[in-house]
Length: 176
Image (cartoon, rainbow, N blue to C red):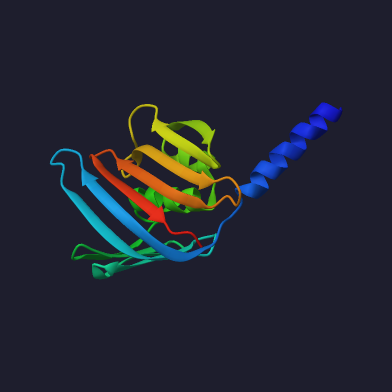
């Protein structure tokens, strides 16, 4: 009985450590196109409420943004503007869900959504979660996701999203 209680306490601590996170900090983004090898760098500010409100406003290039407000996704990236309802566009729903789940520490749901298996490692105070697609990647999904969390406070430090089409986006979140 004591062993079961200790396991439950450990699980609760693990869940509490990686519970919903709030972010109000700067970030950088590196995008690599696998086929061409072209790399672009961007920077901005991220504001995440821990639920379904995410704002990524870029300072470089100025004027770009990616905003989630409930089911609405507003985008102005690389000269392409759009406002989409994730309830009506399946691909956008998957991308929205993946981003919000990764930021809040719910990688299990992100893995389920992307038909991926999960591997975890811990080293030097960081927990690395890797989600690798188990087969066909759903449209708009990711073939590989790597999340690097600070164990002490559960915050996400780095997130790499590899799209099925070959673009790899790495987001580094500044210390809060």
